[in-house]
Image (cartoon, rainbow, N blue to C red):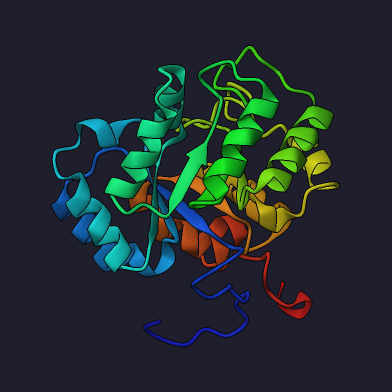
Length: 256
């Protein structure tokens, strides 16, 4: 840091198991990635190459190398996994992971119907080759999953070998964990946390108000995902209580 400020919350250190920030790369150029790494690399733990952007991006290996050289884990979006599976090309998907030296993968079923035991089989198989993140929740805003079901799905996927489970919100933050307005389904989140340890969940929270809500509820070291690359540093200031939204949350009682 550039100077000393007392009474800041203690942030976990990289490589982190909690307090993760997962950024979403929706097709940035290599130069943009270099710029982001220069400023935000120390605060970024994981990067998701969103959807199937890796299929069309012209310099994919070079981009992956940039992230890995910066000590940042990178993986392909779950929609790409589904695109391979629905075409009966899972073995080809495994070859893609090998070809590009990827050590992380996402398993999701937000865009296609998949029996949960089948999804868990994919998680289990992939976990023997890479670190798996599994996404829970539907991209269909009309599909409401009750809290007990979220808990059951998350627990089963962790048991199947997932390193973390991801709470679905899409890049807009308006499905799954959130209402179409972006408001958090607070009862859902709080009930999930009664059964699933917070450090095992990455909450997709692309909107600032959502990030603030989770930090106030869980603390500075909550895992947050689908963060826009240029919002990583602003998020870090929210985590540290250095922005108006959380300014008083981490001060000693005598300072408030």
